[in-house]
Length: 236
Length: 379
Ligand SMILES: Cc1cc2nc3c(=O)[nH]c(=O)nc-3n(C[C@H](O)[C@H](O)[C@H](O)COP(=O)(O)OP(=O)(O)OC[C@H]3O[C@@H](n4cnc5c(N)ncnc54)[C@H](O)[C@@H]3O)c2cc1C
Figure 1 (cartoon, helix red, strand yellow):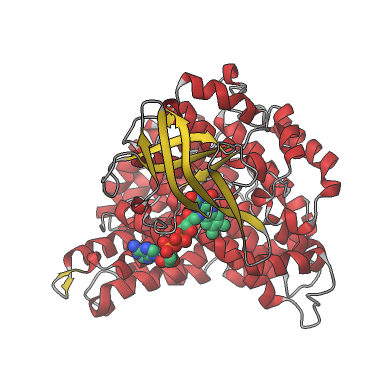
Figure 2: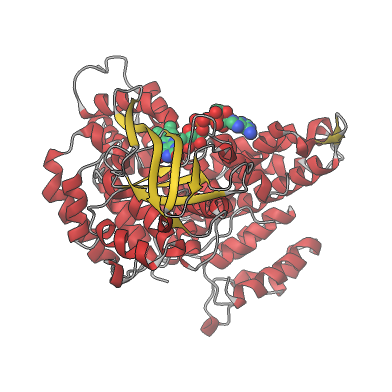
């Protein structure tokens, strides 16, 4: 991670943990995250947007920071909204993974921590894999937005995120048992939001029909050409 | 916490040329490739094709020139591999030598071993096989019983390996054996590399459930090899093997081995609107896996150890590739004829049978998830 990005992440973590109104974030300059330095902005890229929104998802931040950052940015608002949900979900999935790990390491049944049971280990491994997929998809989509065309990547990333949310939230709840089903326990603010995000800015049906038709237009050989042509734009 | 460290894959300047080179070779050779072979590509051995890749400088790409290599960037190699796999090229003959045995020799081998084996491997003409599994040592590899007894003139090997892919075409085997008598579990194991035509080595085919001959039993009866068959340190076999296994987990072969099936689905059924959503979903998963695999390749190229990421990529890639034929089977029109001889019908028939092996070879799903769980601090 670049030095600028880690500074940005530190600031975001502090602010998002404590902020109760969006103005504090506006004052801190998040509204101009994508505005060039010459124009008085932060001069960030979409990887920075991903990093900040990922932290918002991880911290369970409830205000519309995605709107604050992205509303002024020209482009397809559905794609941008989907990108915001992917980024938030990347953080939220990592958070429920962490909560689940902590929980099964602490909670004891049959005389030992739940973490010692192989069935529990294996199901949390699946949650980790799904969270990893969303984090990778979000980072990949961010690079495509930097190139000004992320039509393929955002369709793929949002669809993959929706899939991961379905699998991941179920595992987190299963690992927590009944306590995770209570209003008091802080798991549901993450899992309920995650499940809501699956429907927002394109559910599976929307993106799979759209990407499926686009792939068929590319043709059997065209798909691989397109995937490689697009990622070869990332020259570092 | 971060479930996956992202390392950007910076496309090398030569990417376009390398892709064009592979695509040219493929277009010149592909007339002979059957659809079912393409859907099984790194298992299909074609010595002439491997030699051609060797001549084109596309085997042993990252090895030193003095051993016949080409000192290319690991990311350049990644590009060549993914192009070959996406095309369904028959890369099976040299695959293990290029991916595993060669790199292991560069890391642990003696100068003599490197000079003996690497040039032939880089030429795409010398193949290797991996002698790890035994009847009593599968997931629990520390149960290896094959012994090598040290004498004044060398080692005398007795025992048996099983599931040895390509042993019937390989020139050499890298075997994990017990070199310390009475040793137990991970201790006292070493790796020996020797020629398959050494007297006392016997290969017996095992035919898989689809009727293919890929793997074998390999028997050793008083096989005498010189002292310098030892690779690395005596007694350090366990550590070396673990490093070797990590090399084979996160590459593009973990999500592209049956890519041909998706191609045939698009070509033959793409116009069916009811199938397009599945095509979209499979493309999304493929794209995501590629991000993950490339990130892991980039981490490896920086000299870091991505053992956790590699286990994640293999587990997810295996699950994806196992799900593809089932998902396709589920959406095909009721009129679809599995016996019409089409490329789609034939590759689907094959993959429905062979897909279970994806989460066995190279470490089972349960073992991988155990590795991931350890990384999470659960064991
Ligand atoms: C196509 C193919 C090619 C292969 N090529 C090679 C090769 O070239 N060289 C080589 O050395 N080997 C090779 N293998 C062997 C492969 O490495 C083994 O199959 C694998 O390690 C599993 O061992 P096993 O088959 O004995 O299964 P077992 O270890 O008996 O496992 C059976 C089942 O039990 C599960 N299991 C085992 N232990 C545990 C545990 N502790 N916790 C939970 N579940 C567990 C496994 O995950 C699996 O689902 C190949 C296998 C295949 C299928």
